[in-house]
Image 1 (tube, one colour):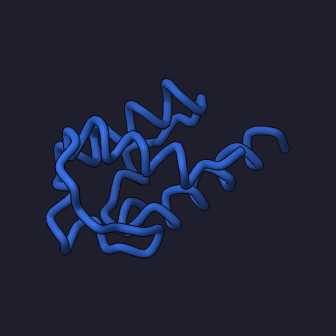
Image 2: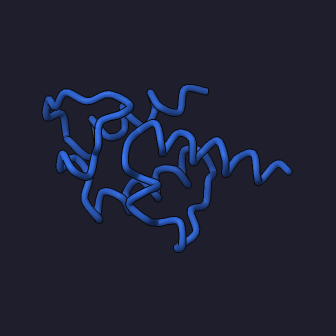
Amino acid sequence: MDYSGILTDFIKQEILHGRSIAMNDETDLLASGVIDSLGILRMVAFMDERFGVKVPDEDVVFENFQNVRVMAQYIVQQKSAAQA
């Protein structure tokens, strides 16, 4: 599954509301102002709804939401751990 693409689409449609900002999987979403603390909470809810990934409170840290690549890796890790 293309987690990065799905996350990017969600960010562009739901967080940026169609505003055009050049970004890729490595763009620092926090430093560039794309995502703030409310945006992180929206991402947590989206990950739960779309991918069935429950993000525990202790994992709701900026490091896990720095960029799309990191978020996609987090989803893969959580899904792997749930299957083990």
